[in-house]
Structure formats: structure tokens, C-alpha cells
Image (cartoon, rainbow, N blue to C red):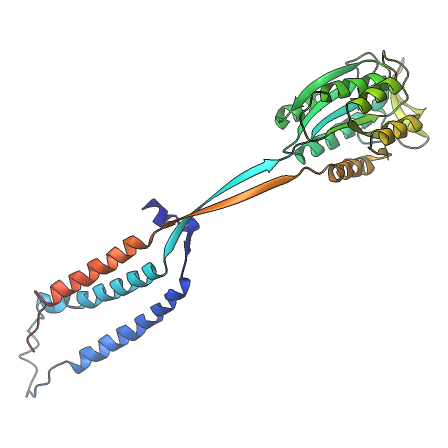
Length: 336
């Protein structure tokens, strides 16, 4: 019965039978016409004596026979149209990609050539990127003078986005250890089970510290078949950078130095691509392009199950017809 009430999931196998409902107005017209023709005629000199005569209860209830016929006819048409309830199930099969975002959090990431600064802009686009990869396992590595796994590879993207939001500059020893950030990201991916392994390395400087040289980390990445997309963040020339002075925090113009040859080499030799982000919009466009380059195949199989609902209407039609016949030949029987 609940399936009959939930019309959102109801469909009809033969809806063209509803065209027969157009016969109902004709049936009503025919019944009224027949009623007028069947009225007996008598010639009386006056109607004053008939005014006090009230119709019997049988006469008042006789139209019920026609109502039962109309209900039976309507229910029969609905039964012929074959109402069905549908239940849709989906089977989703996806080949996920394992991704690690390795983000520079050194002091220079506080430069304000991106708004409000480089690190906040990088966090925002990283969160947007995660939201567009619902079936992928993604992890997060941060590095400055050393590297640290902020979030292991996970499918729980709510936890991952919270960890990205919590990134702050100054939590690690200052410096730019590109080799360490690269090696830690590869280490997170070496046992990954996805169809491909991808590392997104974002930095705004040159390698100036760390226990692992970028060239060594690159060879490790190639050995584990990790594809690397490198992103250099910073405008051309110089950028405003907040500096603590005896007079308080002041902004000073600092030169932007990015080791682009190294970034290109890392990307090219691993099958990735190098990007340069000079403002917020270009950084967002870079992540959009990476999202397009690393497509995840998702197969969705839809199954629709039908349950027949015509029986209650057919039963109602039979009951109404039987009642009409019983009443017509018992209490409403007429002598012709």
C-alpha cells in the first residue's frame, strides 16, 4: 500500500489506456439522457396532491449504482495501464588514483604576491582540488627545512581538508628542502595500490637544505613510477614579504627565486608537467588542468526493478461491478 501512495516512484507500462477516461463524460451524458426518457408520463389536473409525496430512500440511493459503475470503469482503466513501482540501484566501480600533495611551508610562503599570501592561496586551491576527486586516495606532505607527513593517503577527504586548513608556516625548521619534500611524498606513494601514483610538488624557492638531494629523490620517484607535477609559486621579479623589525611588522620587497630548471627536470623525467603560478587565478587554473590530466575512470551500472501494482485496482473494479449487480437485482430491482 505504501508503494501506491508514493507516486514519485510510480510509472505506467501502458499509459495510452488512460485515453479511455474520455468516455466517462459520455457515460454521464448518456445516463442523464436515459433517465429523462425513462420518466413515466401521467396527465393530472393539478400537482398539489403530489407536492407532499417525498421520494423513497431507494429512489434517493439509486444513483449509487451508476457511481459504482463509474468507479469500476476508472479502476479497470488504471489496471490496464499497469501501474508499477520502480526501485533503482547503482553499482559504482572506479579505478582510483593515489595522490600526494607536497606543499612548501617555508617562511617565504608568507609573501603577499598572491592573496592573502602564498600559503593561504595554496591551501584554498588544494581543498578545491580534493573536493573534485571524490574517489581518489589523497595524502598531504609539508616541507620547509625538513619534511613531515601531515596526512597519510586516505579516502576520508573531510579529515584531509581539515589537515590542509591547519597548515601554518613556522611549524618546521625554516629553509627549502625540495629533496626532502619530494622523497617523503614518494615514500607515501611507494606502497600505494591505485592504478597510478601522482605527486603534486608546490614550492616558491630553491633547494638550500635537507638530508636528501633533489636528484636522488627524483631517481627514487622514477624507480617507483611516480608521476610528478611541479608548481612554482611567485610573481616575476620581487614580492612583498612581511618582516619583523624593531618598529614592528613591515613589508619589504624580496626577490622571487624559483629553481625552474630543476622543477622542469623533475616533471619531465617522471612524465608530469611544470607550471608557474604568478597569481591566484593562475594557481587555480593549474590545479584544474592537473585535475583534467589525471582522469579517474568511474563505471556506474544502473539497475531498475519493477513491482506490479495493478492488482488492487483490478480487485476494486471487480468489487464495484459485483456490488452493482447485487444491488440492481435485489434492493433496487425494478419491474418492467
